[in-house]
Length: 395
Image (cartoon, rainbow, N blue to C red):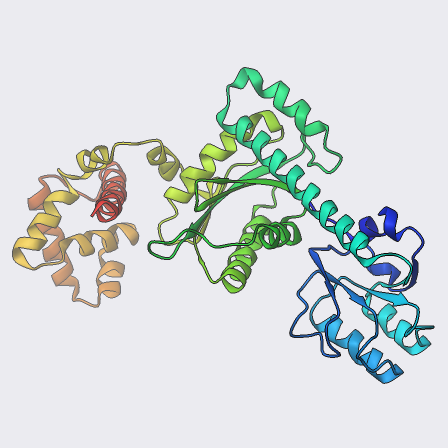
C-alpha cells in the first residue's frame, strides 16, 4: 500500500504549499523523507524519499540548483520541497523546466510552517498505510488457512479497504522462498520490501509465512502466466541486489477468478515450489500431468515402489558393474525407442547399443520397445528422480 506525493500534499501542515514543477510525477511513491544536510545530497538520500531544502549552507545559484535536480533524478527522489523564506525567494525558471522534464515534483512551502509538524504528519501517514497493509495480510492469511465457512466475513473485511485488489478478477498466489544466511534470520526493511513488491506487482496483498517464506496475492490478466513469471524474475534480481539475500525458489499457483478459491491457488503454488527441480520459478499451470499427479503424493516411499522393480534393478546393476545402462535406457526412451538416433546421441556404435538394449531386456525381464512398456519406464524414471531428490534433501 503506497503513499504518494499527492497524498503528502493533502496533509494539514502542507495545505498551503504550491506545486511549481513536475506535476506529472505527483503519483510517485514516498518511502520516507530527508532534510538536506549538505550541498551534495546523492550519498545521503535514498530512492523514493522526499527532500526538504532550506538553503542554508549551500550555494543557491541556478547552476547549483540544476545540479541538485540532477542528483535527485539519479537517486529517484520522489519530490523536492523548497522552504521559502530567508534564502529562497524564487526558484529559477530553468530549474523548474528541468524538473518538469524529469518529472520531479518541486513544491514551495512557506517557512512559517514548523518542520517538525510536517515530518510528524508524513511519518504517521506512512506508518498508518503500513498498518493497513499488515491488516490485509492477516485477512489473506485467514482466507488461506481459516475455515471455509468464515470466508464471507474475511472478504467483507477486505472490501472495506479503498486500496484493494479486484476480488472477483483473475488472481494468483505466489510463494517465494528466501534463503537466509546460516544461523541468521532474513534481514529486510519492511518499508523497502513493501515498495519493491508494489513497484513490480502493483496492487497486492502479502504476508510472511514463518521467517523465510513470502505469500503474495496479485491480480493479473487471464492467460498471462509468462508475464507473471517475468515479474518474479525481476523480483529475484532486485531482491538479491537490494537485500543481499538469495531467492531460493518461487512457485506460482493456478489462476482463480474468485477470492474464495485463493486457498486452492496457495496449495498449488506450494506444489509448484516443491516440484520446481532445477527451475528458480515454476508455475503450477505449466506442470505436466504426471508432475501434478506425483505432487499429490506425500510419501516418498511410493516413488521407490514405482521404480524399484524396473529402473531400480538397472541402477543396482550399474553400481555393481560400473556400467551405464540407466543412461542408455533414458536416451533410448528420449529418442522414441530409435536405436540409430540413441546410439548417435550416446556416441557409441549401433551394435554396442543393440547389445546394451538386449542386456536391459535380460535384467528387466520384459521387452521395452512397445508403447505400454515405454510409458511405464518413463514414469519409473520420473519416480526414481523424485525419490533421489527427496533422499538428498533428507541427508
